[in-house]
Amino acid sequence: MALNSVNTNVGAMVALQNLQSTNSELATVQSRINTGKKVNSAKDNGAIWAIAQGQRAEMGALNAVKDSLNRGQSAVDVGIAAGETVSDLLTQMKEKALAATDTSLSTSARSALNEDFVALRKQIASTVSNASFNGVSLLSGTDGFKALANAGGTSTIDIGVEDMSLSGSIVTLAADEKIDTVTAATDALALVDSSIANVSASLARLGTGSKALGTHANFVGKLQDTIESGIGNLVDADLAKESARLQALQTKQQLGVQALSIANSSTSILLGLFR
Image 1: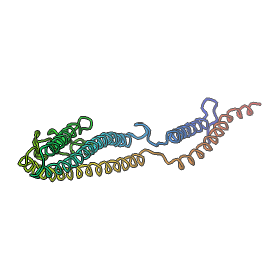
Image 2: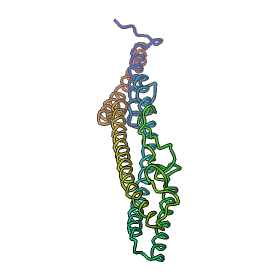
Image 3: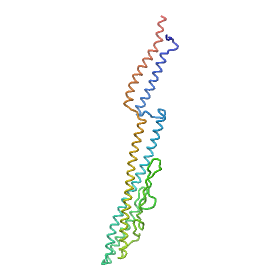
Image 4: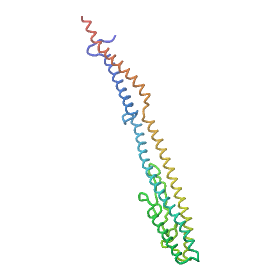
């Protein structure tokens, strides 16, 4: 038989413990509904939180990778645009050089052709010297561009320099090339022809590099989406489930309050025994 005591109300103690447990569960569910996450801090689930944080760091690192790839693609696109301009200028120079090989030209006509040729040559030099993006030039110098390829920084996509400066291995025309004589025009014509072929090959390589950077940037974007989805699977709450649980706990809370009220009233019943 249970002991009736005004000093120790066991029923009230049990009811209070159950109510406190319900209130704790209710607070957890309300937090999940408010934040949309079942793991919002390390105290919710230390292991899962640590994994999610690691993946968030990976996401941040991949943002830097995308930025690097985008800068590289912009630098390559500038190089391609300038290279195409150089190719167009060389095509015009070929026309001038070929015309200057005509032995029947008058001195004034040859001089006019030479002036046009020299002006086009200077435009090539100007185009190459100004073909840079954010300080990176792929048509001059020797550095090229190394775009980050992974979050650890251990892999890169390398784009080499296609140096189209005059007197180089691609544009073989000398910096002072002229067509003021038949012999000079003939020599210049051969150099222009080889330069056109070389520039076309360089543009093909730059185009391949641009495509590689774009393809990898798309891959990194998809990888970020996959990681973000994985993080969500780890920490996001099922709001439909939590909503149903909230209603159940609220009902349980109300019943717990009533149970505690009933348990607390049991001591007053003892007064009736002394009447």
